[in-house]
Image (cartoon, rainbow over all chains, first blue to last red; front, side, top):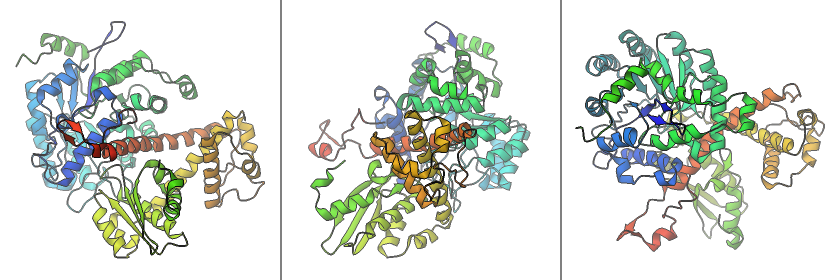
Length: 340
Length: 264
């Protein structure tokens, strides 16, 4: 719960969090080391100085650390925890759904557990989607089209195998498809940031919602254009939001574009924890105003009402969360680590 | 930035040439971005340039384009006999450096990884973006100088050639814009409109807002990468090695101690 300076309570759903193990003990090879090092680079490059972590905590943090940073020190009411397997880089995977399930089981009211699949696994991918539904009751997945798999250096949502997987998700009610389209860790063939495949699948799967993580930056214009055409395309603000500190004017330009093209109902707050922590992000976001000249150019404002939608209400709508009911439920189990 | 004047003449020549090599994605010189790690010059005119990118994962196609640019620019110096380019700490470093030292072309090196092969397409795509970004910078600078949309739409190439800016960054962008106009064969004559689009269509007063909206979108995309890359580069090689809890002198000499105020 975020309390505004005027005392209003804002319900916060963190749209993108991780519970990873990138420690040297879990690294399988140089790629594993370079991967977590790169994440740490993002962390140090865009965090305020007093929010930077020691490398060792960043590599591997405990459930208690995570709970504290999101819900006690941080303003989150709920968090969507995304899965990233990377089994070629890490012995036990980076943050598999099994690892994430340990936190969701301990704090079931706090977490929305999302899975992942790789359509290049063929029949196994379809079986895995069934497993996600049956074992973890997943309501969403996070897909990483730039991931390597054998000889393949990436895939598209429009690949026939991906269509089969999406059709199965639709059938099973896994309706929220988060797609990583943004700065790439592992480069794709020609254009690592292309977002056009989202356009096609959004048209063909009207029952699914496509949340484009990182708003397709650095392809913001393409993403905005697609999101205007397709009613079921959303933007996740992970990685975009920390620019609020490092480059506040630039952040205003991005927000102005997003509000102009997508409107206030299709943007989701996300910290990308543990790359960044939600406390400073939400505080700065609530205090932020788009610089006047930029706002005037696009005729948009970032009002309190819009901020409240972005911080929680939009994600609540996607994941069928009744905010008042959820607030009441959480109030009965107040935040406490000592409760274990 | 190092003091160029203090360098031996041949080293200075090389660094000056390297100012002409841009990161294709960011349209900024490698030397400004801090990507060039070391340059050495042998007595026989052999040059070795080592460069590093912000992450191990930076797109190989961009890395190839940069290596190619380094080789081309340095080889243009009359006294240079041989150029070696070495990419360090990158996922493709081994294949790429091997191809270079074996004297094979980058196209050969690329053939090892066919999925990265269409460099011409990548180069053209980012060259177009660079054109748009430079054009926006010049248009905004002219607006700051008090010109109305009508005035910039009416401006000719000859007038732009003749109107330097006092502000260094605006002047730098003007010269870069003129260079890319020439490179693309746009507005070649003095009475041509100074601000054609990529297809050569002139800027109009009525079309000003739409043109600027499009150019702004290109800049927003490019700046995202630029800001991230600078931040990542600034932090990548700054892990402090500590002895008894304190950084050693070597760490300070190698700038491994985090420059807290400059990071990000």
